[in-house]
Length: 250
Image (cartoon, rainbow, N blue to C red; front, side, top):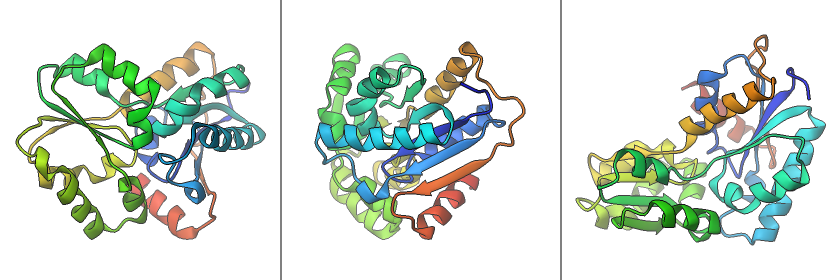
């Protein structure tokens, strides 16, 4: 494995850009390849087997592209496919995002909490083990079916309508919001418009630190890279690419 290899990052769409932003802040000299699987978005309503196959295909592509580490920037894919991928490709470090529910336990344990995530994440064994271990018994679980798709489309009016219909009932009830999908940090402002002043938790900053630690431990840190970011989308649309770089640079 070469230090000069790229870091591969994938998500079911462009939501993982929120993870990449955090990674670039602490690893600016690395080169990156981001893969947006919008052709198969959303992952949340697919079977475990379908998700595993989709993720495996992306990983094989990354290996051909000389990626030295792979970041799974999709909570559903992390919970459903990370274990399989680690077993199948033991030579590659996989860093997987997960809902930041433990952060609530660490920093705001006694406060009522809303976990917003896809149905696939909320139903996953991985998340339920996390919940069981760190449950503050003041937690509401909300499977946000269709929300990631609306964020992917970028229609602010549709997003606001969705949030008003689905989270308005939690206004005044919750003080913490766990953003359990990498798309959701893109709409923090809109969530706050409905819920008022709440504390947000997402797993991206911790993932970025963990990635740096893993690369350091394996002597794979690149101090001389250009900080280049390549983008691929499974539908091959320019619109996704433009939006991705707009968010990344914004």
